[in-house]
Picture 1: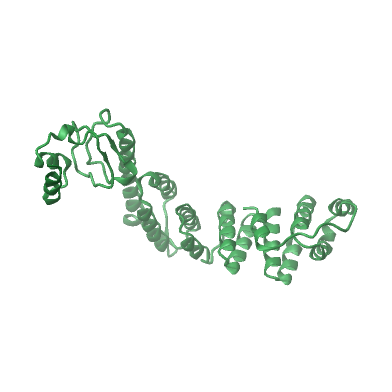
Picture 2: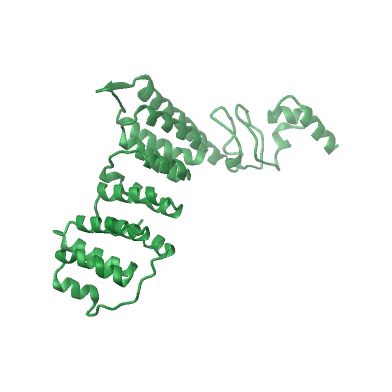
Length: 311
């Protein structure tokens, strides 16, 4: 009998759960009572009045046309919330298209993205986590970045989303675009510095580290860049970076020296300190060396370097 029911279901020309139960001569309201539904498409179905043990919500396809009884189904509250998210997604998505594409306007030869779009893109990025619409958002970003190609804020929003999504290759490619970063972009670039180092793309890694430093100078970003130049044996660049440290901020120079002492060998550190002496007092030097010019040699291999990066 059971095999006969399976044959009838496979031969049916419909996927509607109510109709399938009727095809095998069963009552639709109780036929699925002890079944957990997974990996099915229930868009457009009316499940009201049908008892279903449970839904594997992350693995079913649904939309706002799916009707069900939240009280009857044990995890339909989750589905109801996701339906609301789907509905909200569609509203925001359509608003972005209308404002960014249908009503796009130029000034001085470039398209200007309405400011309201940034918050709406952030909203979509948050909503998409539960409804698996990452690819739609990436396609939207692609269109926007192509059209609004001078918009740095938009570009960095895209980079941030790609990092969350795990598309590191695209994030690296976007970073390679020659743009001027703002201070608000620095933390996002920091994330890429570490990513690029771990994937062995040292040129882009160093370019990103310099971009982060230029966007928002800090002691830790100076140290990151100096360490990276040590890693690739670029001593002229080390000297250039050390000479660019703002020595009017004695506290920053001192913290940089203390940090570097932990992660580069003693001979290299002595050379670095000679370049930094003009920004440090005798008391600073005494404190840095701890009363002695000898200390344990640091391990500057790639493993310790990854741990060292302040990201």
